[in-house]
Length: 335
Ligand code: AHG
Ligand code: MN
Ligand code: MN
Image (cartoon, rainbow, N blue to C red; front, side):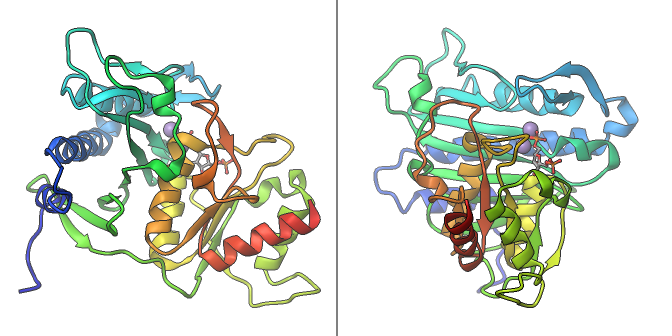
């Protein structure tokens, strides 16, 4: 029978069963992330009514405006995961340092890195935002987790996913055995399997980039943009249609489902790129590769970049393998 109703809980447990050495800790960790996502989705849905829209008036450690829901989402994930004994440490886009497990609560073998609310400038206009996460196995032996536990190559990811708060709330995750999407049935409060085995379509449909910053970009990135638009004189092609939410999760989700490319190159305002390697690029790179796509910083596979700093930024080209490799070629040739 193939019309089963499969909850995310059951799906996670069944995926973990494929690893004979599994203890269940990992399943519970993923389930807790899904639960945090449900709490954030609920808060977001009523934010306009209870005064939680808008800015806190503070800057976060990225020197970007912090929204009240950034803070709420960050706290929710921390409160959900600090006391379970499953994690050695966490790292969040909204916190400068590694987040330690409180004294007196046990530490476990995993590390969780996350962007609690991605695309938060979309909140006030009721447009799509999301949460991005990655899970690694700790490297240190025991006791409190260290920064080195959080600074692992994307290649070492054991689970990655995102929750997208759009016209419905969805969670998409992978443990390296396919990419699976679940839609929240908010009436019963369960994520139900709606998109099993997601594969990025072979035919690219959309390109996604912020053209406002074109003038600040390198020759290679500019030329690549023109090529996508079909206005490269040496190599004309049909232009790809464009979409841009300004929320990486949403732009990525569309790219994964419909095919195409999202990119945010380095520019003279952000010489290292704008997006964060640990919380944004790596989890999505792991997902896209598992779905048959590719992610690059323009020079190499994102998953092979050795992170030096928790808040390190990176250029990102992600989606259709052929298009991302084409971006690498433009950068190699002109930069
Ligand atoms: P965050 O809200 O977590 O700080 O991320 C914002 C990011 C990302 O989601 C998006 O793709 C990008 O900023 C948009 O940047 P521009 O406004 O420069 O296009
Ligand atoms: Mn973000
Ligand atoms: Mn964020």
